[in-house]
Image (cartoon, rainbow, N blue to C red; front, side):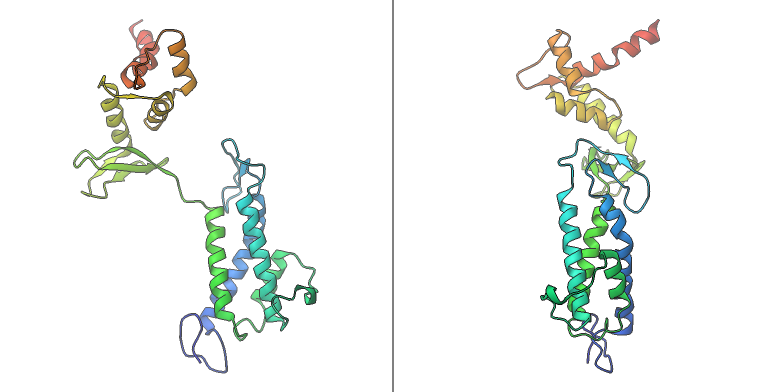
Length: 255
């Protein structure tokens, strides 16, 4: 008989080989460890920092509870209890015969240590399902770093992206390595030294923020209302906003 996961030949009617059995049990135990931070992630106003204890206040939450995390917890709970019924010889869909009162964490731990984990008929199927859920849990707890466009490559003009903490970026086309801050300032120079570069208040605020200059959309519109900033048919000029933004600093330096 072959292992249902890696197709290695097994003996004694085992559905999984010893290596895959250990991986399956390890994934179940890791998910049991992730249950607590996963419940913490339900609060949309807090980001628990994945597996680290640091909590960070996020921007305006879409809902008080993250419904995607709630759905994931429900799916994991249903799958774990269904797996336990299979291991215990009960019809997987007959929840009425499941007399377990343990919570999700205890159920996952019990499944990981069950003696029939590698021998029941659908072991390979459930291993794939659990692995898929584990990947989704990892994405929720440790979301991939957000990357944003910071400017074009000095050599080939390809748009480059970087994370908030990246100090260097490598062009995916020509392979040139450049300092991220240099790319940002070069983009800012291109925008602010060309009178034809225009944009909305939100676009300008976002572009300046990437380069390290803070100016809110509300500030830009306030400047317009006070007559300090002209508005053109296609938006505000980046150079006009830049001159108003650095004007106070230049005045102080002259004094």
